[in-house]
Structure formats: C-alpha cells, structure tokens
Length: 324
Image 1 (cartoon, rainbow, N blue to C red):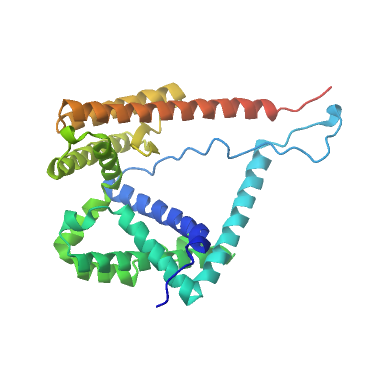
Image 2: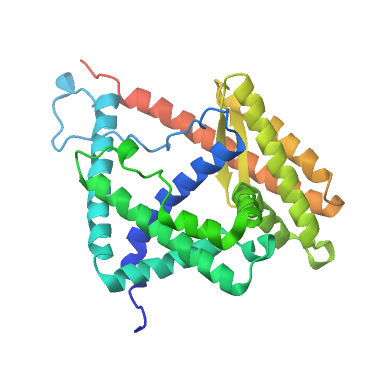
C-alpha cells in the first residue's frame, strides 16, 4: 500500500471522533465502577454563552440585551450545525478507501497512547497487541460512522441508533483475549484515570526515587479503589460527583455541594483521601511529589470556580435591561 500522507487532512475528523470515543469510554467506565451511582454532573464551560452585540446599536432608551435563554438557544443551534457539517466531512472521508485507511492508522496510534503498557499489564504478545489495537481502532471507526450518519439524519434518535450496541469487533476482541485477559482488560480500562496520574508522577520523580512497576500497579489499584468508594458513598446519599481534571489527574467534588466554597471543601476532603491511600504505597519523597500534584489540581479547580463566578456575575450585569 502506498504511504499514507493525509494526516493533516484527518486532524479535525479524528479529534471529533476521539472526543466522542472518550466520552463514551468514560461513561462506560463510570457505569463499571459505580453501577448504582447517578451520572456525573458536568460543569458547563465558562464561556458557553456570550453576549451578542447588535450590528447597529439602538438608542439607549430602547436597548435591551439578549436574554441568556436566547443566547443559549442560539449557541446550541450553532453547535448543532457545526456538528452536522463535521459529520458530513467525516462521512465523505470514510467513503474514500485511502482516507479511511488513514483514519484507521490514526486511531491505532491513539489507542496505543490511550492504553499505555497494556500488553505488559495483561500479558499479550506483540502480535496479539497489534491485533487488539487494530480491532479497537476499527471499532472506533465504525462507531464514528454510525454517529455521523445519525447526526446528519434529522429523523435519527441517538438513543435508538444502536450506538451502544455490541459490535462484531467486540466478539473478536473477546476471542483474542480469552476470559481471564478480557477481565483484566476491563479492570485496566477502569483505571485509566489513575494510570495517567501515576505516569505523570513517575515522570516527575528523580532516578533515586524511581517508582518500580509493581508498586506503580499497587498505587493505581489503591487510588482506583478509593475513587470508587467516593462515588459509592455519594450515590448512597443520592448525589453524584463532579470531576475536574488536568494533565496530572482528576479531582472530585460532590454534586450536592451548592456553593463554590462547598465544592472546594468537598474536593479537598476527597483529595486528602487520595493522599492517604497514596501514603500506604509511596515513600516520603514520592509522596511529596504526589501531594504537589494534588495541590496543583486544587489550585486549578479554585481558579476555574473563580472564573465561573466572575462570568456569572458579568453575565447577570450584561443581561439587565437598560432604560432611561
């Protein structure tokens, strides 16, 4: 096959499809880790609704700012139109065998990045690993195609489009892995968040404080176990959890925390629980670096909540009716 040189033309479609994939994969992980818990509440982006200025300003006596509801509806319509256009581009690319093959190769790279050290973790040969990533990539391409076709069809309902149905690749994956490794793979996917955090931790540690593979796996298991306990406890009182993540990990606050102060307090308490579990595994220097990462998460969350408050205050002011 001639070399594939279409990576740049595939970037936008790949990003769109990968966003869908990660959203689906995250939801599946949530269902696996806390089957009785309600879905995470999602915090809308701070800049989701922007005040649209008129082309020609009317007199001050008649000036009325666009209502937040109208802005929200307009923004949703724009986003929907953009998604439709993106889906049309995706479908056009998928009809071209060369571009489809390029998208498949791109997905295989992303799957390898998404599941680092998977072969070693569940005991696969190089050939088995290559086959698994091919099947996972094909699974994602098929899902993207279904999603795109449903998006451009006004009569298609996402709930009824078969997007959550088991596809043929799933059986091939099960046959490839076998029962034991399939179970290990599911457990591996349920710890992706913790694995990324531990990867970042190991990157920051000096050679003298290196975290061996076996202790890294022990840490991953401990953090995942504590995260599941946090979710289950929230579910038992009828609440969910809000997740806030950066490159160093994810921090959680209870969805029933009504104020920014309460959200920070909840996140801090959950962070302390993670630090306590990490202390069971790490030595003093390793724990110091882990605590540093947790502090960075807290600072980022505090800044996000502050910006959200500022935006809400400014939006409330700008949405007021101006009269003489």
